[in-house]
Image: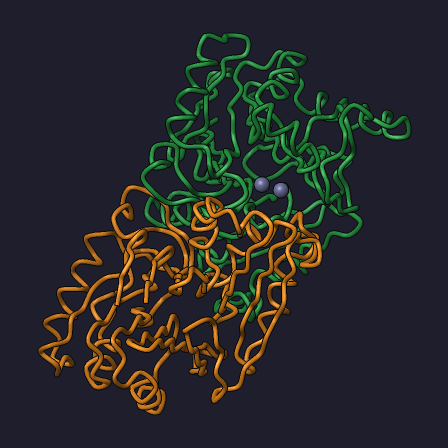
Length: 307
Length: 278
Ligand SMILES: [Zn+2]
Ligand SMILES: [Zn+2]
């Protein structure tokens, strides 16, 4: 299994010399395997533009399956510039879990709507299907992939995805706050809450449930890609923004014995120098192995002997 | 007049090594008045980058005023607004100016709707955000700057040209346009005699395709600038496929262009981080 990173930032893309090494595009990863013309794409941040160009150029992938963790712009804003959508010869399936307050049709209509975009859904020439699925069961898709999901702790909503292929497992966990203090949902929280008063008793069970759901999803994972946008100071200042620190990610990885943790969804202000320091800090860890996500790189999972 | 460039890309931001010189942020320009008042033009990702630098100003931390003109509803003109830090700070005021023909307020509101943004609605932003609509013949006065807006065709929609004048100089911004013969006449008239014209360089073609033909990019801007007698033309809104070298090729073709009837016309590429004093 090959996991490729096309966009590793959160919030908003960032250009310039101080971020050129790790990259400035927002969240998008792809998952592929030997002997399959199917490609799985997780999130459509600005990184998906370059992925689209690569798909056209390489001309091997014909079946494309797109999942979104949620519809915050940093996870969908590149979709309009994903060129395979406009080319015939591609089969593209867009999946969305059925959820209260969520409509994939409405999301696509907005992103491709007249106000924001000069390209509309009518311009699509690919064979595009939209599938809303029940997220309580695993989904099997063409090419031998099994996909399951679990809800995350993030404003409005977000889901983690587990992708399994021939015994190789990658779990994509973004965006999420830890499960220690408060549940983030549809209510807007404008001010930073006082952590010493949290969690309130009414939320303890829901936090536990969400955490154990994620731990189940991550069970036996070879690779976990995790939202570590925050350092601990950032979390203490803004626990209601819905992001984690590397320590939160490590805690989950240790519980499930994951082999490899990739720190992901970097804050736009995190420079190459800071990310190099982060990489250095965790470079001695072996259980799990910890690396920092970098644009235009891939990680191979070869546990089952195939790529 | 002091003009600064923070985002010069159209369509979609393209960070990375191939855009390091001219920049990969979407549209954002700034004009600063003599006593430090700020006018932003467009709110692409460049505005968010600029705003991190703006936070060094004491006033932006709770007593500041920022004036923002948004020229078009396309995502490249608005996508940085949610991460424009002064708009999130309580005590600040953000005045947003729009032409009557265009409804920026609704677009910004739908951009920050709950599914798409953790802010959920503009009223959750800490600052006081106010919208002002102007007709083509009305003047917006900000300190010594007199500003006029006029709309131009742009596919199925309209985009706004912005003319900014102080006692010594005139700058015209047209960030996005699909010119026809009539609109070319109109923009030549609108920018006639300006010192500086900052003009869309995209010449059409397939929006998503990275191998589109860019040999005509900037040519219409040259035609407008030379007919309007402006002293300096600055090309902007580059397609995402163009790398730094491509942009220099476009500049060279524009300088040598047969549409350039004015040998005195100075043509430059807009570049993130640049500041121009007129
Ligand atoms: Zn995000
Ligand atoms: Zn998010």
